[in-house]
Structure formats: C-alpha cells, structure tokens
Amino acid sequence: MPDPDRLQTLLDVIPDVRDGLTRTERIVLYVLRETQRERNGRNVPTAMLYGRVLEYVDMSEAELHLYLDRLGVKGDGL
Image 1 (cartoon, rainbow, N blue to C red):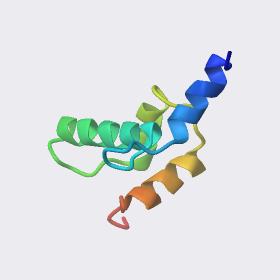
Image 2 (image 1 turned 45 degrees about the horizontal axis):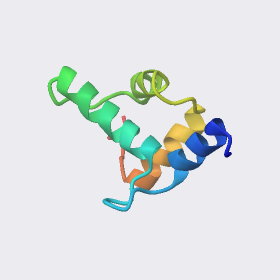
Image 3 (image 1 turned 90 degrees about the vertical axis):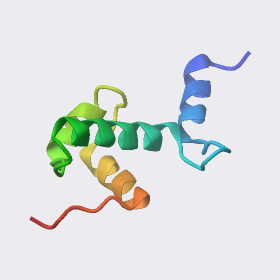
Image 4 (image 1 turned 60 degrees about the horizontal axis):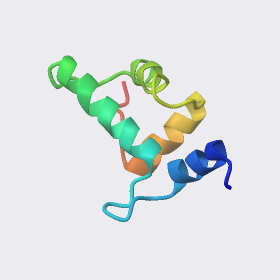
C-alpha cells in the first residue's frame, strides 16, 4: 500500500490533464485572484501573496517566485 503522504506529494506536482496546472500553481492563482478582488483590482504585493499562499502550501519565498515566473505573473517594477 502506498504511503499517503508520498502519494499526496506526487499529486501536488503532477499537472492536471484539463489545463496543465499543478495543485500548487492552481492555489497560487486562486489566492492571487481573491486577494486582487479584496484590493479592488489593485496589484498584490508579493509579501502579502506569500503570506496567504502559506496558509495552503508550505513553500519558500524563492519557490513562490519560481511559480510566479512560470505562470507569467509579473510585477509592475515598483
């Protein structure tokens, strides 16, 4: 019988057949969208996004930046 933790880890990194997003990518995009709604469409500071994503997924700040780059999420450079 497979280890449940190992199975969950595997499921977190395998892209979904419907859209190619992993569970973690989907969470990052969901949290970003919800936070933008709360801020009336304004940009979301990365530190704020990171704190909120940590409520769902354990990752480093560097990992979040990798996900944001992969998803094409860019800041305004300010």
